[in-house]
Amino acid sequence: MPFISKDWRSPGEEWVKTQEGWEKKKVLECTAQRYPVISNYNNSDDNQQKSWVEGEEGDQSTSDDTVARVPPHCHITIKCTREIAGFNGLSEAVRRLDFTSAVRDVRRFNYICALLELLLGGQKLTHLPGAAQKLLLSMLEQLADQVAQSKQNLNALRALVVALSALREAERRACWGRPLGSRALWGHHDHAIARINRIASSIRIQEPGPEIVPKLHDMPEECIREILLRISDHRDLDSASSAWSVMASVCSEQRVWRELVAFHFTRQQTAGALKTDEKDADWKQIFHQLRKMYGLREDAQYAETLSLCRHCKCLFWRSLGHPCIADQCPEYRERLKEAGGPLPPHPVPPAAFLKFFSL
Image 1 (spheres, rainbow, N blue to C red):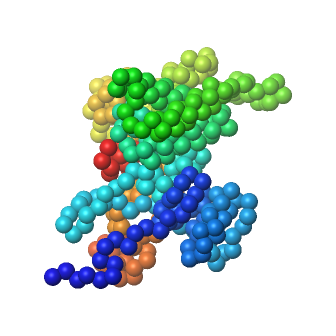
Image 2 (image 1 turned 90 degrees about the vertical axis):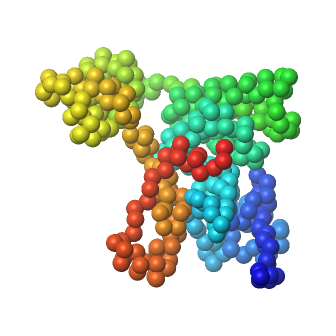
Image 3 (image 1 turned 30 degrees about the vertical axis):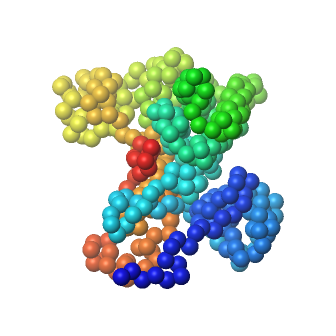
């Protein structure tokens, strides 16, 4: 016979009114990069909203006894069983992991771009709930603002804008020239897409004036070579070779492609593709041959990826960490020592991240 107590049903969630609408308290606690966590939620609604605005705008300071900072993290359900039943929501995970602020971090920028590209390219965005659609478009607008300010990664933004426009046109033809879903929601989307297109079209990259020295063309060939040796994408090498004759000369060197092969592939894979001595090998041809056979290292595209803790089943940014059971529970920590020590976190690329959700 089940035991029925006062909270035998779900006790519900605590909500806070924000500028973007009502949000769950537990979600706000995991957005420490943008907002402080307000611990005193027993005050009036006006005080709650005032505390939120102070954390959002940063114009007023909050005392240390009412603020506790928690790194962005998100617990997920790996496998549903009779004992553990759960559902992973994409919008809640995006808020908990603070993706909106992550677009302004140079280490996580490419990761967010790849995630948005997967959602827009596969037309998964239109199958998401309305709140998730608004949140992802807000991320894309934040990304466009970041590109406009930094004048970097313009090609990534243009690719996302093209995919977004193609998705919008496909939805217009979905049902007699009108998009499926709420008209008010798609009206909001139209305004957001128009703002994104306006930001992308207004970006102008100007060449630095003559007073800015030294320029790239003034650098010696040795410096150019050291720059190109640190490029992990072969497409960037092809673009660099078409930009300047000195870069074209350096990109044609075997050393550049040999280092690229060593970065992406193991020695066993490289040995299988070598048919002659290493001194006579065409490393560019070997690289493309191995790329077609094995593919490239996915983690090489991102300076930082999400990680999955194998102990508490939690997604987090590795550079920020997360509150893990292995650190908080002494008994669990002792059992880990007896078992050989804690397990390293597992990297989660964008495609693997989306597999946690029903899209």
